Length: 424
Image 1 (tube, one colour):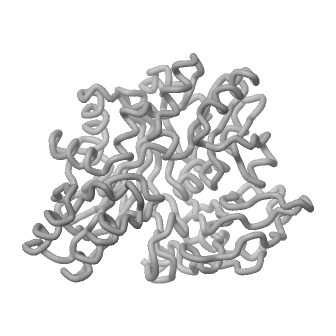
Image 2: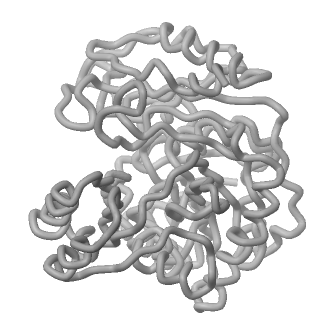
């Protein structure tokens, strides 16, 4: 098979790495890809939102299967475009990707189908939002309705902060058109867990759990980022919680989308909060998470392409999805200053240290080749250093050792990814 992966980050590098292990795959292309992906796939200079060019390329190269990694093209309807041309593609159609594309839609869906989530209200008028806040209990959560690179969520501890948040999202449009509608929801407490799943429109197969660290600095301080590291599995996600979520959240979500005439095919990412009242949905994503994918896929026993084809063919019920009885930790090496201002273009050294080491992965998130052919930094999140071990403690120790194998100017990382689990 000839595969085309659409995207350019650490998630796509992890997807390409798993695709390369498949006995079914002969050739991989990635658009646009990055310097790390280039070691496994032929990178093509076509942007993820250039749908016509991607389709033309897929036809020219006689691509057998397309995998969409990113949220923007999914929400924009890229799957519909490929399907209209008769090209097999993994991911939800536009009318199903709205599960991530609109937080207001997903909250209304959960309310209608009794899927546990935080109490909420949707607003299109900032004045109405401000009136609502006058009587609301603090702290409270404000969410831009649309896609905002994982950053459109504000936790406000006081009424003043909440008023400023409404101005930021709805009036100053800090997150662009994503803030045309805003969701205000109750603040929940408890451990957060990420659970990814494969879906074929009717059936769902749950992947192993993971736990992300969104804040830029140690101790969960600093600004929200796209993710500074993650580990899998989550010790908070017990067998009992899994069984409860399957009954009250996972299958009900798949059934709800089908009942709405929006059958979902692809990956549903369930962002959960394990509250005292039971697990509740924080958010849905309509694709693999980043950096969760970098710890989940290395632990999967199955041939990823076989599972994805079963999703597209509607035969996922025949798949026995299995994961290794081990653990993985990913530490993101970022550019100092991320997620605000940071410099790019610094040469990266030490990649050879990962060669021939099966338990270690160096996933490229923001890298490129410069004019001299060197791999240089090209983003806020630069590399995802992942290690697999028999336990979370072992995986964490190995991952942090491996962060010393590569170097670049302004290299920054959190030092406490999974630390609380070590000490539990």
